[in-house]
Image (cartoon, helix red, strand yellow):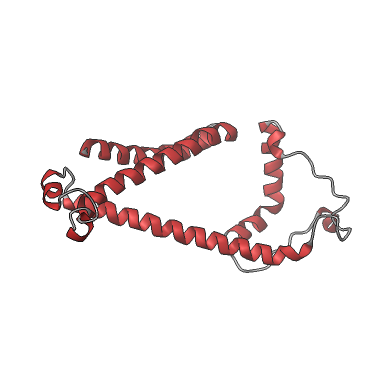
Length: 182
């Protein structure tokens, strides 16, 4: 059991190092198809491994052992996971769960804020400002070389503004449009 737990955690570590390298070296569509399912599998396996390790310690608590069909003494005698490793696994699993809850809470609050801000705008074309806009096909339909060229041009013109926005700076960034600069 120890070997399989260590193998899962080692594979998660290897994937943490290899994933970004793979993402940079292959086409974005292929990287997405490879890395997203692999990330989900690694996350599920790591969570399961840490949960099993933590349970070997938590299951020895008499109050918790009363809830299940196992004996705390038998579990203590037969457990292949050292108490220190089980405790660390429980801490890591607790930290991951709390981090996930904090992330989901922050993203949810941000989405509520966006809805409050933009919800009053109405449907496109309802006030006449967005009714005649023609939306081009998505950039993913372009050949990779063309997309790279457009992305480079966009980053040259608006890169600083985008960086400032995504770095979380709380300052107004004004980007001149083509009409204003012409």
